Amino acid sequence: MKLSDFDFDLPDGLIATRPARPRSSARLLVAEGDRITDSVVSDLTEWLRPGDRLVLNDTRVIPARLSGSRTRQSAQGEVSARIEVTLLEPQADGAWAALVKPLRKLNVGETITFSTDLSATAERIAEGQAYLRFNLTGQDFDAALAEAGAMPLPPYIAAKRPADAQDKTDYQTVWARHSGAVAAPTASLHFDEPLLAALAAHGVTFTHVTLHVGAGTFLPVKVEDVTTHRMHAEWGRVSPEAAAEIAATKAAGGRVIPVGTTALRLIESAARGGDIAPWEGETDIFIYPGFRFRVTDGLMTNFHLPKSTLLMLVSALMGQERIRRIYAHAVEHRYRFFSYGDASLLLPG
Image (cartoon, rainbow, N blue to C red):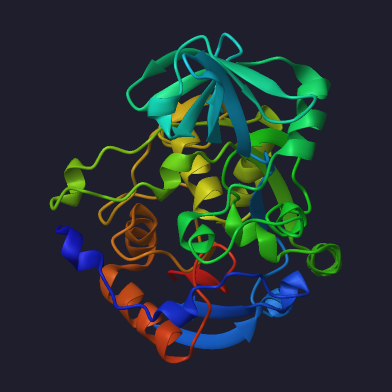
C-alpha cells in the first residue's frame, strides 16, 4: 500500500472553521455497504436500531495553547521574549511535555510567565520539546489554565483564524469528563442533549471510554509504504463496566458503533486478545486495510485529511474503493470537512 493510494483533491473552501449550530444540525452522510444517503445528524434515530450501542470518548480537552514571556538579564539590561507554548502531555513526575516557539529563546532553568497566577520553569529540553514544571497543581492549575489558555485548534483551522472564547464550548463534547486531551474527539461534537435523549428513547445505549487524544493525531505520514508508519502513543482506559457493556451488546446481537476514530482505536486495542476486555495503558495501534476488526460494527466519524492515518482507518473498515466513492460524493455535494465539519455514519454491512 502506497501513501498515494489515500490521496484526494479537497477544495480549500470545504474546510470548516466553525461548527454547525445547533450541533446536531450538521449533515450526515450515511454509507450502508455500497449505498450512500444524505441525511442530518439529528436523524440518527432513523439509522440506528434499538439495541445498538454507541461508544463515546469522554476525554476533556484542556486549553493547551498558552502565550507568555520569559525575562533574562543581559549587558543591555532586562530583556524579554514572547514564548508560545502548546502543552502535549503530562509526565509521570508532574512536568508537562510541550512544544515551544521559538524554542531557541528558552534555556533550561528559565521561567515563562503566562498570567499573574500561572508560570512554568523549563526543566529540560530534548528532541524539539521542552519539559515544563508549573507553579500550580491540581484544581489551582486547572483554574489558572482555563483562564490563561486557549483551545488547541487543529493546524488547518488555526491557519485560518485564532482560537477564541467560543471555541472553549465548541471544541468540547457535552459529556467531556476526564481532562487530558489536546485535541477533541471531533465526531462527538455533533451530539447535544436533545439528540442523546432521542437516541436513548429509541433504545440506543451508551458506553463511555477514555482516550486522551494527543497532538500526534495531526502528524503527517511521511513514508511511502504506509505499513512502515509508526503511530504516536496515546493513553486510554476501557473500564470493566465498559467492557462488560460492549460484550453484552455483542452477545445480544446489537451493533457496537464507536463515535470517532479515537473510541474505535481504543476498543480495538482492548480486544486484541480476541474479545473485549478491561484495558488501560498507552496504545499505538495502527489500523489500515487488512486489519481485522473484533468488536466494531460501524463508525460515526468526520471527514479526514488526505494521506492521513484516519483515512486509512476508515478505508480498513469500508474498503478503499468504497471510501473513494464516499469521499467523492462528499466533495461533490459540498460536505464540510475536518474537525468542525460534517459527519459520516459508516456501516460496512
